[in-house]
Length: 96
Image (cartoon, rainbow, N blue to C red; front, side):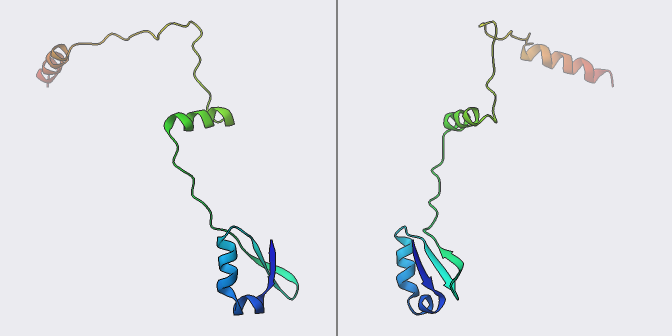
C-alpha cells in the first residue's frame, strides 16, 4: 500500500492510476490525513448456475432444502382429459 500527498498526486496522476490498476491500493493524503483511496478495479463475479445458486443458499442458510420423510414420490393429483374439460366448459357456457 502506498501513500501519496494530494499535490504530488495531481502532478503524477497517471503513474498512481497505473499502480492502482496493477492491484495496489494508494492512500491519498491532504495535510497528513488520509482523505481518499485509489483501489484496483472490482472484478465482476462470474454468473453462477442454478445448482450453484441453490447450493450457496443452503450453505448460507437462506434456503431450506425440502425434506421427504417417506422416501416415496409425492401423490399424483387426478387430471381430467382435455376433451372432458372442454365439454364441461361448453356445458357451463350453456347456463348463461
